[in-house]
Amino acid sequence: MSNYYFLMCLLPALPDTLGDKMPMKIGEIAGIVGRNVHPEDLEAACALLHGTDVFNWEQKDQGRDIFLEGGLLSRQDIADNINLPNYIRIFREERERGIYRPYIYDRLWELYYSYAYGVAQRFECRFLIDYLSWEIELRSALTAMRIREEGGVLEDHAILDTFRPRDFSNLITQLKNQRDPLGAERYLDEERLRQISRCEGIAPFSIDALLAYVARAAIYSRWEAITQDFDIETYLWHGGSM
Image (cartoon, rainbow, N blue to C red):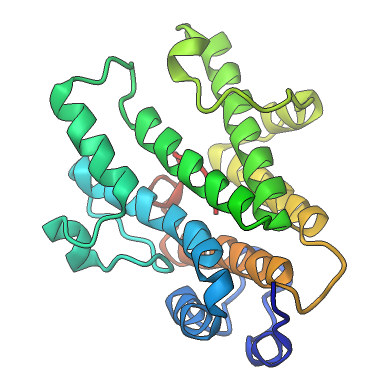
């Protein structure tokens, strides 16, 4: 994979604190990356950016007027169901036949994560391999916490349960100690930022560093919107994270 000396110098420094103003809109950042990434790295970059598209399509499919910038699909693409990636088309076809899950969009995220992780493995993208596996396991841990509190069958909500179990017990404890949903969401995203730093490697101009930058930018962009709107429910990343 190629180095990105010019591109990494072109992209602005990100805020120091969640909620601070972004120096550039996340849609502009995604566009710059998409136009300048080398062909051999394009699919890995798209796999990361598509996480926002899955979130946006799920919201539209449920009748919510929620759209986050930074994906590859426009608001019009999603409204008209055009240019949809294959995993969304597969989800729609499966739903027509019947998806027997308590929350059918678990299957949508499973299809996305399977696609993205497959891309990461095929192109040996270390950042995506490490960060996606961590995010999938985090989702499983959060689901298990909700099942213990509210009841249900954990297996009915499983998403790619083939990864090695991770110990999220301290994270869950810290999460429960937060005073409100906003504090809990902030704690989760701060932990995501720490994990991104662990996964990006030591080469500052690599594709891993570039994708780590994009993943960070998406989190900071969402918190800028939360700070402006004071509506945490609008911006909760229910399905997962980039």
